[in-house]
Length: 391
Ligand code: FES
Ligand SMILES: [Fe+2]
Image (cartoon, rainbow, N blue to C red; front, side):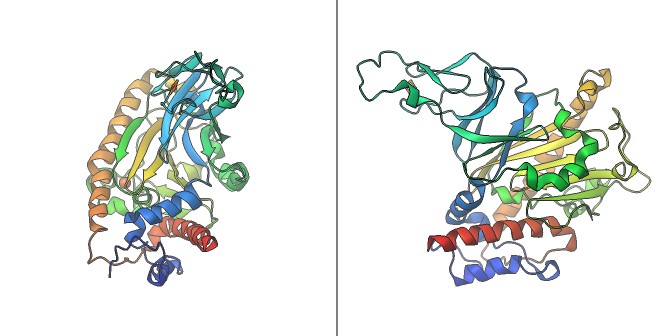
């Protein structure tokens, strides 16, 4: 039976529900509906997972020069990602140290961030450089009014941030993934166009990991990706369950690979020419690599039923200048937009409605849904451990 308790976060029944998702895959069930609906469970996920893990916010090619910046909202926190005058990429709080006005929005290039409220001014490293008419305040100390910074780490050209100053670095746990992905030269890729942005009004896990399997091409994408042979429901895993990432090969339909419109990654081994490599770097970073490009899905959770999604198509830099690239980019963006807006998002919105039904119980998982099961076995122990240590 479905329960809609919001407190306590975990009673015995809820622990039993979560344990169903942790059984061996052939006997496992999905997460219980309340794990998608309950603000208290989301608060525990935020505290014990999302604020302790590395979260992807963008690409280094978003900020190629000193003074380049973009802004994001992550876990409800307004942030500025800026390359400072010293060339370093930083994640700064966008909240003014005076009276909390958000000092920047959008993206661009600047020499300073001037708060629109009373004109306090910060340099591109976050240091407060001017605060008019504050001489009469004995509490004011300019040096103590820099914008707070989060830790950042660059992995394969993606900018990750972490709210936890004690967090272990990201790269060491992705070494095996680096080897798998080396032929795609991810660190060098460029987009050549702004990302597609979507605001989604359902729980973040419905996309990552729940929509990140190939099984659903049989239904959601039957008339598009499945019909063209671009995707099949078959999954070949490239790494054992490891608590850090999932990676797999999804072969094109046999004898029917999609035509190469740009140029394959030079030196791509034959086994990677057979299809797409799908990756989920836990908890919120997803991407697909084809023989000629890569598309990433940046999931930025904001609350139990809201997240922002950025979808971006990237290729090797030399291809951005190729005359064929403009058409390919336009076609690929249109395809990504169609597949998300017309197919995946409506399915996920309908699933979110279904998860509020009192008649739904945790469903069984197909072996093709191993990516979900691997992720649940990463997420649930972290949340349980955090809550148990509170008691
Ligand atoms: S709130 Fe920013 S200067 Fe006052
Ligand atoms: Fe999909």
